[in-house]
Image 1 (tube, helix red, strand yellow):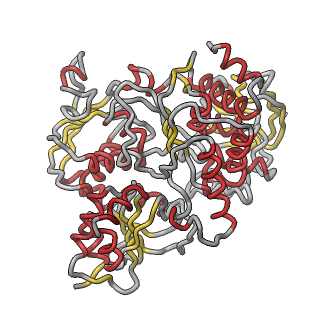
Image 2 (cartoon, chains in turn brown, red; image 1 turned 180 degrees about the vertical axis):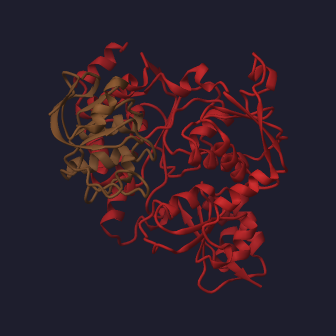
Image 3 (cartoon, one colour; image 1 turned 180 degrees about the horizontal axis):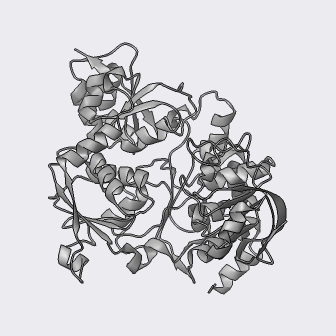
Length: 129
Length: 400
C-alpha cells in the first residue's frame, strides 16, 4: 500500500488501531498510555506501536507530547493515517516518527485489522508484516 | 511545492538544524493540508506553558536560542505554568524549566506577553493579514472578529516565528472562510455567560461548516466576543464564524449568501438553557474553587468581580481565583482595584491559570466558572465542573 510519506524513516511494530480520531495530547508522557474515557484506545500503551488512525484531534500541545514521548523512548514507532492534521504532522516531524498519510480508503479496513505493519516513510509504503 | 531559494536552503540544513526542523514541519504540514506554497506571516503567538512543552520542548527552544536564531516577525507568548510574579521565588524543577523556556524565547526577541488574551494587551492582527497564532481561543477571534487570518496552530507557530511564513491552506484561503450554515438567534444575550451558551448551542447544532449567525444586535463588547470565541474553539474544530451585521466579513446576509440563504436553524432561550444543563456537572453552591478569567480577564472583568463581592465575605472552604495577565494587573494596581480584590480574599494570578499551572486539584473537586472552556478542560482532569454567570459564580463563593 502507498500513501504520502510526510516523515521519512523505516519502522515496524504491532498495530494500535482506531477508527476514531486520536488526540495524541491525551497520551501520558510519563508512560506512553492514552487516557480518554470512551475511546477505543483508552488505557492502551502506544509506545512501540504503529498507530493507525484516520486523523488527529484535540489540543495542539499534542505535537510537543510526541516529542517528549520520543525523547523517553515511549512514542509510537510509526503513524499511518487517512488525512493527518497539523498537530499530528508537526509532532511526528519533531519526534522523528515515520508518518504516512493519505492511504487509499479501500485499504483502510485492512490496515485497521492488521496486527503488525512495516512503514517506510521514504519509499511511502505500508506493508502488512 | 513551491519554495524560495532561502526556504530550500533552510530545508536542506544550510541554515542550521533548528531552522531545518522548522522548515520540515511547515513543509510536511503544507503537504498534508494540500498547500502548494507559503504565505508571509505578519506575527506569531507561540505556546509557552511548560506543562505542554515538556523538558524536550524547552530544550528545543534553548537549542534555537543557542544557535543564535531570532524571531523574524513580531512574536507574542501564550500563558505560563507559573505566576509571573513568582519568577524570583525559590522553585521546583518544573518552575525552573518554565523560566528557562521564557528566557530562551525572550533571547530570540519574543515579547514576554504570556497571556491567552493578547488582545487586551494591544496585540491585534489587522484585517487581511495572515498570522500564525497558537492558543485555540485566539484563532476564531483573529479570523472572525478582526478579519485577519490564522489556522489553529501549535508547534507550527514557533516554526513560523522563526521563518516568517505559514502554509497557504485553511483560513488563509478566501473560500474556506465562506459560511456553510445559517443560525438565527431568538433570545436576549445580556451578559458574557449568554455568549458562552450561544457558542455551545451553535456548535452542538452545527454540521461542522463555518456558521453564520443572524439576529444579534451590536455593539457587542470585545470581552463578550472573545468569550464566544473561547467557547466556540472548545466545541468546534473550526476557527471561523460570522455574526451578521457585526463581524467584518459579514456585512449583511445577502452578501454572505449570494446564491440565497440556506434554511436557518433557530437558537432560542430553550436552546441556551439546554446547554446550561449540559454544563452543570455540580451544583454551583458546592464550589470549592471559583475560577474567573478564561481567557485572561480584562480590566472591566476585574471591576465586575469587585462590584459583585462588595459587602460580602468568602464562604469558608471556597477559593476565588481570577486569572489575568501582568499587563492588566499593573493597570488594576494603579487604581486600587487590585488591593480591593486582595482584601476581599480574591486571588488574582498573573500570566497563568489552573489548567496549565503546576498545582494539582483532587479529582471530584467542585469547580464553578463563568467559562465554558475552563469547565470543559478541568472536567477532562476529573474535576466536577459547572458553568454559571459571573454573578452566580460570585454568589456561590460568598456569604453576606
